[in-house]
Amino acid sequence: MGLELQYTDRQTPLDEEEKEGLKIKSITTQGELDEFEQLNIEKAVEWTVHANLKPERILTEKFIKNLHKKMYGDVWKWAGEFRKSNKNIGIKWTQISIELKNLLDDTKYWLDNNTFSSEEISIRFKHRIVVIHCFPNGNGRHSRMMADIIMESIFGKEIFSWHKLNMVKVDDTRKEYIAALRKADNGNINPLIKFAKN
Image 1 (cartoon, rainbow, N blue to C red):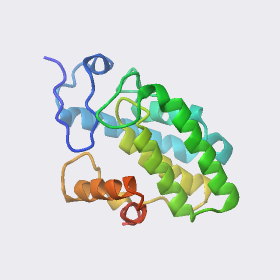
Image 2: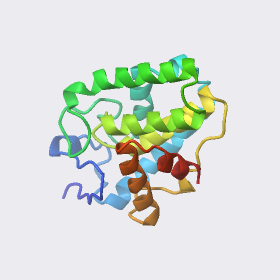
Image 3: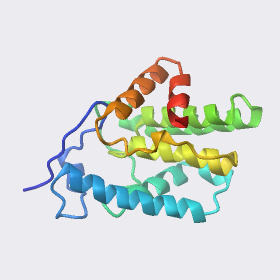
């Protein structure tokens, strides 16, 4: 039968080749996929707690790929690999490594020069990496976990609450999140910071 997926606003459709990367062939519905991905993500969160992450290790392409693999590697063969096709959102796939390097360099500059508050650095990073859209799927959840890791492991502060919800479901929380992302796209980062903290 194959995997039938429904996409909502700002979600990245998988192409057929990417769908072939599904490791658990018994998954056929969006609900089942969400469930398996959530279990995998919980394992990744557990890993971050015990990994003793150093700032110089976090702000690298290697770590960004490794985190994605930890989050989705039980479910997808391509977890931790940059996408190899253009999507409805995100930059051209051939530019991913270049734009990611620019983001990592900018973030190190912000840190070295105290350009923004810890919250703003974390959320600016989250927003830019989701705009780049490094991976075939899971970019939103990956970017939120990166923001939390930056808060906790670089700044030694509490992670964001992100409304304590799984934002895969289409509800008012997700709509608010998308609205905040759109404002960040237009240069206003504050609604996204506020959303992350609520």
